[in-house]
Image (cartoon, rainbow, N blue to C red; front, side):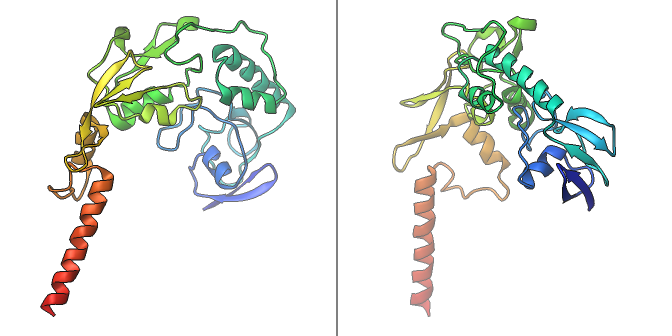
Length: 265
């Protein structure tokens, strides 16, 4: 274990931990849009800038890529850092003018408008909320292993979607992309027995139906993917049931076993 100082507060951490993670554990808030502890550090959004004043490389750097070491000392709020964050927030307000997450953080820093032209696209599948942080792409590729979406275009024309803006068989309909999106840009809906990934070129994924209650409860391909990962595997007579029916059946079996034990004794 090592000691470091964040905004004058002495913190204890394991050497090599990510500074942003340590700060959050200590209740020190550092804004960030592209960071998720399940993914490797990326440093795309630049919002998590800190000023390293002792230990390691001095100067302003992203806290989501900075590994802590003994004696490290950083400041998370300085006039220069706040100036940079305000400029970034203006860019994000232009890039994602309908993202309430961006608006709320910008207001906290006193930014109520942007000097840059707003990018409002009619019928944008990402609801004019995408800041191109890449979390959805990375969770789809690195965690789920599907690789159903990616960047399209370059510069100001860069977008995120499926290849050629067409429905893709690679999508499992798991919704992990929507879960990690910091601006709630990704939308999908369940219609009868189908999940429609509205943001991803209306890609359609069949839902699995519970044979007990008849409820459609999860994307069929993702359910198969998840069941393969379970160790130990789920009981054969339970694997097709929805969570509610699975729990009910497990409770029923437990009660029967207890009753059998009582009768035998």
